[in-house]
Image 1 (cartoon, rainbow, N blue to C red):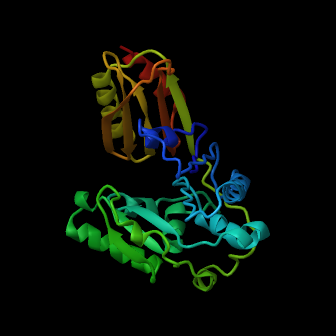
Image 2 (cartoon, rainbow, N blue to C red):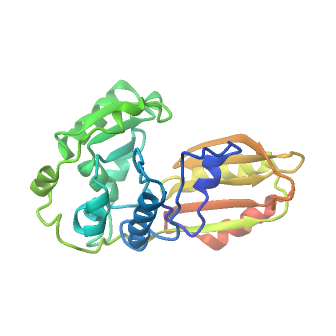
Length: 293
């Protein structure tokens, strides 16, 4: 599991009070994109997993949404040790039907990759998510655009990402010949260039938060900055409750739900992660502190 920012919070959100499954292992690589700064972590993680857990059914590599899939896929072909112990079964891309068109049209800095376009181009399977929030005409428009970018990918409509695992695992779908037709330098080592105006930051607040005020504050922020605030997520320490609250935002859409209770002795604090373009970190931090209970 790869995090773009310095705070590896998705592991906490996934756990959410669930009991650990001894047959499932999560390895986190944070504070960078797996396609560049923490690519070495990916290599070491795969080697260690295969060495420690014999007879693995498979390894799922979840990248940050800012990742160019090219170097990730290259790892399974250009690193000799990896190519001897693992093979790339397929690349699955989750496509946000409600926002993908604006993401594809976004202007990037010169030389910077459009990650959304790259992820669709490399995908063996595209999950067209949030179709419940789109009209039939919008879904068709998205499908037509995806097909222009990737003629051979399999598209599956989903709501909240629910899909039969048989469409994702052991699909034997990745074909290096197809990728070479699309990108002739695929087997050459190169550095991915990201748009430097896009970044992330973390805010931690130890005092309990007023849950209603937080929701009002977030709605106001999204109304003003939804185009530039790509993603926000976190855990809330809410006043008057023994439970954690988990929230997610994607552009203008926000969802918040009650999670597991704080464990005895667990450090109580709110942790907020913001990912976007030209975000004013100081302004967001200061305004957040005004809604402490």
